[in-house]
Image (cartoon, rainbow, N blue to C red; front, side, top):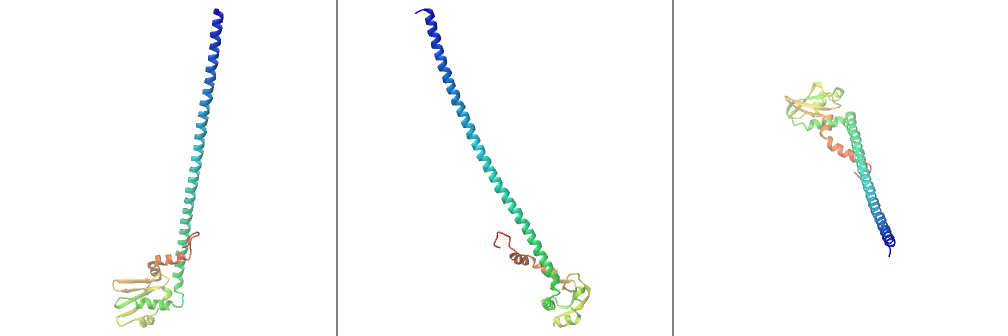
Length: 195
């Protein structure tokens, strides 16, 4: 074999080997590119799912927050309505037909002894008179109409020396406020709740 034939054979073998190497390299490149694309696609899919879950979770949190805020606003509004109803009831109680019976009951429950000064509001001066108080006096208690007046909507303040018993309508309402709020709140249930 001649030198040229050997060189041609070496060159031919080298070209075939180079072509095989290039083909193998191209195959490896495509495989590596496919793996990278697959990883990117998987990562993208995971990121999309994570974002969806995060968005859904945030939507749920926002919905819960809005519901709580709405419920708080409704509770506040309901409390204002109940408080207004109690104030209105206190103001109107003195106008009711059984008001003097209520005052008589308050006087009968007085545990002070001796002469007890009774302070009334200006509007009650014509109804709660010295005669009315005399009728409700007992052996141990003598009710006397005071020259002073209180500024409540009704009821009385009973005083004996340094001791005073405040039985005004506002004080009675204040002392019973929590139980009245609970009773009245049952009449105004929140939407979505069976209170």
